[in-house]
Length: 196
Image 1 (cartoon, rainbow, N blue to C red):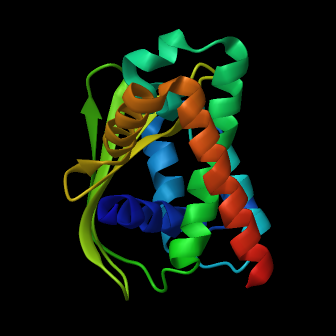
Image 2 (spheres, rainbow, N blue to C red; image 1 turned 180 degrees about the vertical axis):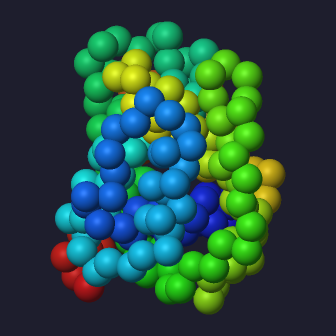
């Protein structure tokens, strides 16, 4: 759970940029520059954060990776529902855990091509709340836009972390049990937001 919170904080650092920051690009170096520029800006607008998240994160890829082989057992309706809920949980968890990470200091960064048409943007990142090695796995989406496919904090993958949790729930309660548990968490987060 700690690694999930740290991953969300790191994603939040990038998502705290303006809505205009994300532009579809077919080059990983151009997308990396957008992410680095975004990480060093601050914004108070949740709408801007949501806009950047919607445009720069490949939620379909993250959903497939988070479910592993279980993804192929879902109906089309379940896949759509799962992607929508995963995005909502990531978004609300980010704001609950750390709406504003504060000043981001990227001590160093490097873009390295990876197998399977991906690239890794890695850097040493320091904020008021943490110091970590953060890597963003970037992939070329079917729309020919480079997007975030995973966030790795100190060698712990966000999608691997999700997959471990989701696999246990599916083994115990099935896919409908997972979807119900996700919905309950979303409902709880919504109620908590109203009472704050």
